[in-house]
Image (tube, rainbow over all chains, first blue to last red; front, top):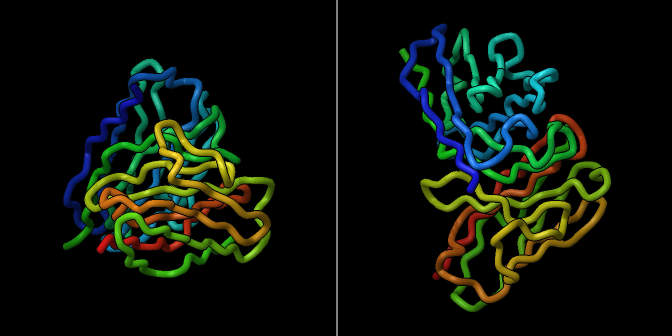
Length: 122
Length: 108
């Protein structure tokens, strides 16, 4: 059974930093791309970042480009999202999601983590 | 960026009824790169349909997807109280991969 266990959500001041983690099990982690999708309170879903199974290629939405970095440690089967220079508009529940293939283009999300709430406020 | 519009915003139906949810894209979606997700209150999204019409693992056949080009439909036959949720369509054929705003299905 695929499991994605998230940790790291917190209350942070504007300009601060936070790292989210997503521990994966139940599948060959390195064979699949992974993504982060966020959902602002009461809002819809936004694809934020993605990384190929090998970790060689990454994607970041324009809204987080230059502030967020996605990475993975295949030896620890864990996905990360380093978030710097946080803004109030980054407040959201962040979900890690497993892509259906080793690359993140032209793939859908077939499993999701439970979510982690990030609140950015002074 | 492809913008997805979903209608209606809210659907209120009784158990056993049929629900028809629409998803319209601002431009044609490449190949069959469209998915549907269900999000129950307080839960993470769950994949229902991928590739326009393929049911994900464990999804009952009361859920079906159809469409092409810019117009897509999710149909739920014989609504169950557990189907009360927000349903999102997503295109993954053109980056950035985008979601629709969702349709809320309320079971009377």
